[in-house]
Length: 440
Length: 72
Image (cartoon, rainbow over all chains, first blue to last red; front, side, top):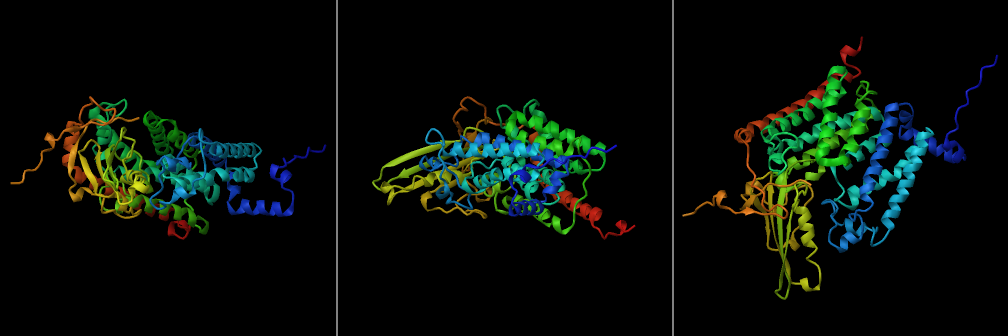
């Protein structure tokens, strides 16, 4: 009796792109980006889905944001990265109610993400990969070039997970290592009184959620230990250690959602469970030529995390280099910025800005950019903007870390110390004491 | 004579939305830890560097293809 011949399903790409040159391109694309790894790995396929989900979540908050619109320039709210302070020239989108080019862009991206979902369903990982590419490119361009305002740590996670998943060889190993390394690197920002004494939480009205105030230093130091040392056991061959640490971090992320809400948890927790949950198996570290790019990325992550450590002064106070590495809950900030706009005719207008939440990072750079917005205009020829910036961290005193007679002439250096920002070693004047801060 | 301003005499700064809240204070444990802060800070940095170096050494030892224990 004849056995039925198993029909191999024709992939969408073989139906749509039939020309030899198209097939040649797709085959090269598949080979260059090691897509066969995704085709053969259930873990990577799940991570692909989790990454796609993260883009939906990210763009859901970005679609209405004015951070990437030209209107952010006119209302003086745009914020460029210190390494590209001319980013405003690249802005072209408009969001509702001023226009709809930005919603249009995001709905196009929504469509490409849907195509990617369909291609995943049809197991055509080359087209699924191609369809995810526009989201990756826009996310990267918007976050690292167009604005600094969208640079939440969860966006870094999404960027690096996507980078490895889409382009690197040895995807599974480097995804696992990247996630563990993020835990490890995040402790470089936590080696500070913020976490060693737990002053981030004790200076909040609400304290550390669910736990009594006296216990705060126990838990903050436990987190430092688990992220610094314990997280490496996620990569262990021994199930007892691996599972225990996994449960700890699952609980940790669920707990952290009390403060950070869904966005961060939705990006990290699914990937954590996929890489280290029921599908986990030990993966040997690759040391071949193809792995060089992965190791290079890990090295770069470490170097960028060290930038704020190398710049003189307490980065939590000066915020210099803070966002080049992971910075979640690095300090509980309160600040007062006072700009006196002194026009050429001698009239003075005072603009006082106050932070209202521990999450407002109180970066002098951000407030300096705002004061720069007052420097332009015909009536400012011959005028100046006198500016003071008072900063308190973790319930400590307000220090006057900036006292500039004219902020219009200041220059901000992206990777080194700016002398017009006083560090704790410059003995900045104490202006006052803060009240307990709020977190919202 | 120069008199240094005492922090306790500095008025509390009131920020928007925070009127009526208490000034921040440290618990007894935090005060104790603060007195040993430099040691604790140094301890965590040594732990950070030590962990990283151990992981690098262990990764190379376990995975380097020409290591003696791999030749069997």
